[in-house]
Length: 285
Image 1: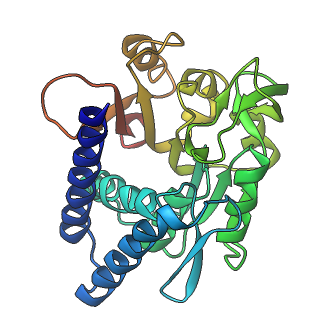
Image 2: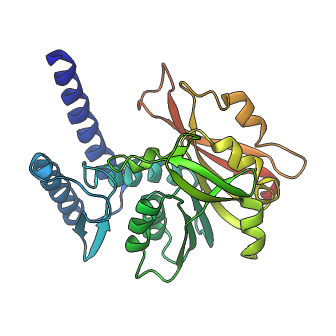
Image 3: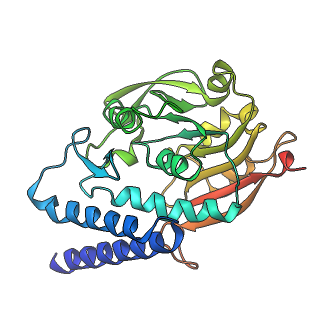
């Protein structure tokens, strides 16, 4: 038991320092802004044993704004997005994003990154869990260019059940035994209702149910330039890597991989989860 505890402590420290380095290298923030981020991050981590986390109540004052976070680890999750996701976006050398759709937004960290990198983007930030959605709304209450939507996206219209862990809201997912009821619609229907003609970037992170979002998005993918998607490989009975890749090609769209990140941050070995950035070459011709 003690060995497992020490192993987890070692893993957490290693991951935290790795994120510090990655953010330092990737971000264009000033040195003072980076140092302030690190100070706030570690202040929250130090206070963790003494303060019970409650989603919707806990936030960090960061550069003049409140950032409501999603776990007892404070803004460490935000840092992961700022460092790792920003690195992948930089690979694509995208100059401008006019419209972005964030499916599975959680509390909005990815949407925050987009606002940081592309200040003029119009963003649709989509999250179905009520407690998490409350944080999402709070994080964008003063952002008139970001529209938040409390729905789940899948391959059909209707209602569904989801599981929710208040200490790990980012892993909420469809679950027939779940206690949270949510409204469900397809991405194609959402796009039509909001009269969206072109999507510069579509991000999908729905904890192993990405295939259902894609299944309900055939028309949407044809008008999407870039796709940023989390793919769960390990212990996933919903799809295989091959079956998911087949959903990214048709006569109307063809997505080419630009870059990926292994969840384990290794270049070789097992790939439990990966973040992938694709470009629709049909729209580049």
